[in-house]
Image 1 (tube, rainbow, N blue to C red):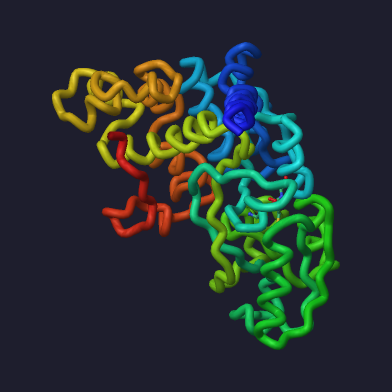
Image 2: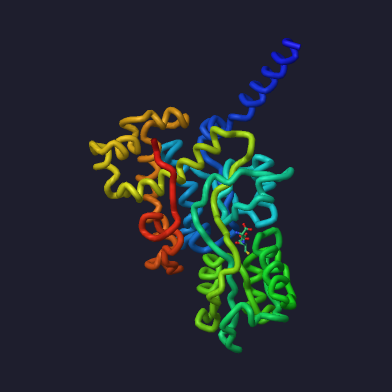
Length: 336
Ligand SMILES: N[C@@H](CCC(=O)N[C@@H](CS)C(=O)NCC(=O)O)C(=O)O
């Protein structure tokens, strides 16, 4: 009996040791491999210099900076909606940072992953042509709607039409680009996506002013990075890099002030910069892991404003993604 218990303990210990390898794999490889979208302006898309840019891309760069003190040590792998979780489970990527919604079905079952927090609180909306004038999603009875399969978007769309007793003509397109083309040419009356993505879509239409985003938000889309379920140490690294970016904003630590923060006497700032607490070592990272991330891409506010904020092309107000103590729901547990 005792021997059996010992054997079981050894097997379990072996499994844990064998699985807790992602950080080592990343370090040995010399770069992080990050799954992103195939092109979603503001989140992950090529900029005019052909470089990956966006909110989700910056999260990957922050993670690379926390590990390597170098935000360039990332390879980006563009993934379609219906292959993203499989790519993660099959170890083709180390982390998925791709406008993905945290939902129960994605954390259970054979393709189950773990969401390492919420980096962007989104919700699903509808875009229609300006004419004929539609002002509410409840006027969409019988409409033809373009949507991408393998998304929460498709499921919410059906739920919304069913709950409101409306007839739906859903047109699935394998990529977001094809769905938008169909909307543009009038094959669909309506385009549905996460609100943030609709802002991006509208901008890429030949005449953005001809399309209107309806005010209705029909779902919760808590977007965040996902990892595999077999490596708690890695899960913690990804999760706490996200929390560090938010805590940096809350503490007033930005890419501009982070060097000064190194000399601060404030206890919470000292923990952030690695002078106290030893949290870098606990995560398996450098003492200055959080400083490295902020130096590379800025704090949450800087990342948000640069990529999607009101001064950016997308022009999305902070809204729910404002800090909890400034009227939003962005809330990170403390670094202590
Ligand atoms: N947040 C939703 C939607 C994510 C999603 O993949 N949306 C599609 C459009 S509805 C998209 O952004 N596609 C971009 C691409 O295929 O690269 C989810 O996690 O299912």
